[in-house]
Length: 240
Ligand code: GLP
Image (tube, rainbow, N blue to C red; front, top):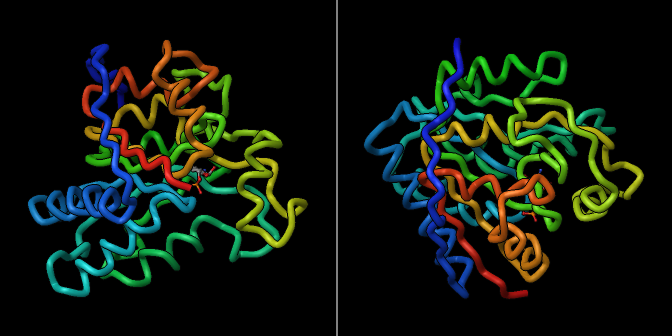
């Protein structure tokens, strides 16, 4: 499937500041719910980490209330660790636990990149383009596992995690030593193909990355590529 770069414009992204992360998450969840209601077979790009958790809780509630069905929805997660010592540490487990097991999605339609053939993920995504991509951001400005220095033209690939990222993410593991050193991640180019992007940044630890993002686009801050996207919204809550 041939690749076409979306027509990118140098527009300033929309930024939504909100001191209440419940409200912030609700805004994003309602966008997703509206999309799925109008286009049940839509394609969602999903993220892990603590930032999207309230969004997932809102999606589960909407499903339980009968407002939305994910039966025809397809998902592509951003990334997956390599060499986890227990299944519970994988992002597949995280997503099953935090979302998929609680809604009516067909797990056959939930995808994660395969480290054995990363580029295959780009082929799959090109066949089912992502309508809405949810993103968190690392304290060093990474999105997915695209660490500083990653090419803006990158496709899905194996990434070596920085010590900082491993330390930041170690709270999800029994010990720092158990945090994998590598992951497979959608590339920055892959992420930019999504029709719409919502980046959620919660907490004071994300301030530096966000302010770097608003400086010039530079691979030193991978998230700064989003400034080139025509439909990216940044949701920010600096509290805690
Ligand atoms: C990991 C994930 C990223 C996520 C980041 C921030 O590194 N690969 O996709 O954005 O964590 O996580 P948190 O929201 O927990 O701060």
